[in-house]
Image (cartoon, rainbow, N blue to C red; front, side, top):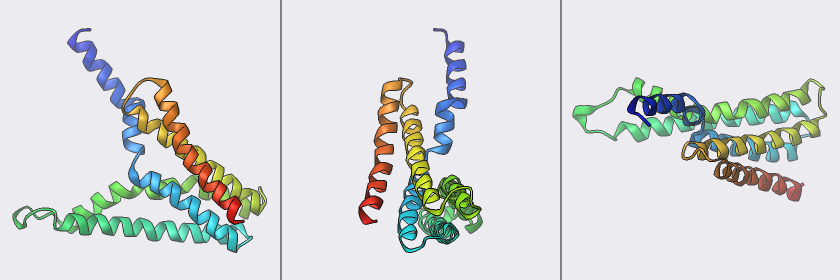
Length: 178
């Protein structure tokens, strides 16, 4: 394979699955899906109304997102010497960039819960559907994480199954608690 052909393949890969995976699969995205699942379980136990679950999960996610940004700012504030001090504005921008996945991960399951508030799904079905969506999201994140390391499908599928299994474990916890 010639040098130019290799460059073209690497550029295509950077804009393909691996490039997409790099931008989507973040610690904050995985944490966000797990946080939403846990909050759906906890709030779903204490309230029957989808709107209550929606508002509590949304509020919690926003608080954790702000806390995540704050932690990034505080962690970055003292990371360099005085001569290389970074502005607070840049630290906040960096924190938002690193933690956006936590907020983004909540959008789809919260959308599903909204289906319960408008009557498309029953409240109970909306909660369970949101949890199944989280299982799928975890599976996709696992698949994409492994896709950053290999083009082979078997390891990608194992990654998807393992991370989805975490979501199923969370759902089993809900069934056990309920």
